[in-house]
Length: 448
Image (cartoon, rainbow, N blue to C red; front, side):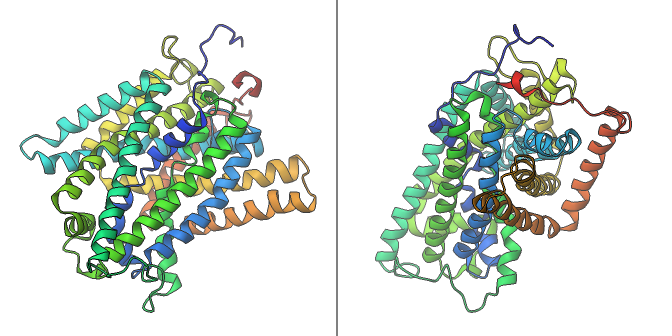
């Protein structure tokens, strides 16, 4: 097929914007919203739990970095597994990872609707959700550069939240509030905790790191992607991890009696009011609302690129999913589809959407870790001592950890995710005429 006159994705993103894009997807200030429940689940060892989660995610981040060096295309995990294992496995991973990216804007829409209803109870929630989806879809259609610049602004506001919170915490601690000291092992060690309790919360905390993987879908829009994307993956994971550990450390020191929250789901408001009053709480609430835009724009852009890669391959109908706007060079139809799915937030439950994301993320992470072994260790025969460490042992540790956490998902996540997986498998059977022919496969040269 001749693609000479077809529009292509535009290489316009520098390393800085890719890192900001991934951090915007990650939305580090979600730490504040989840803190109350998480700290109670770990019996106060929340910073230790985040340190473990960071270590686990670094193994998987390593595998994503290795694979994007080999296949710097818009398909991300879909392409990695397709080229390392088979088109069939690639299709199922692409189908599964869509759960993460396609449903993320829906979850963010719901979060924003709930928050705005609390601010303005006289205005129906659906008004805010509809406006939100229209805005994020429009920004993504107008181009990845605009989306990246928007997310940069959102991320700076998030950094502002962390800086303000830490400064107010230090001031309060020095004045005798909370633990009364800025140096303490309290958030790391608790004699009442045991490792099984801490490990049970790690899968939930791992989802806080979603974002490092999403930037692999921007490979065709990034300058020098073989170098820039791996650097971005490590930077996003480490920066996010440091913010989570530092933020949770000061949250716990500011309010050591974590069992006494009036509402664990809104604990950061209690803590913020205690150390910083109305100013700090107002800033954090306003920033949280704006952060919803950044996260939804980033996840919508990533989902649209995976759909585009699958459409370009012919795995999904190419006229729709493989279409790029000649003017904006963005996958317009995909973005409109994702926006339409986000409208499901008007009637779907948050529990259902989160269950789908949990299933999709851990299954995909496990298979990307295994892709490094399949591609480098077996196909490329990288079996020296260093090759064995880099391309067998490290990714095998990553696959074992994410695979273990996948098996520990609650039954609701496994059932709902399993149904989605089964629907994809049925579609694959139809696409391949009951496996009598392979599904279409990416022509890598066309993707450059």
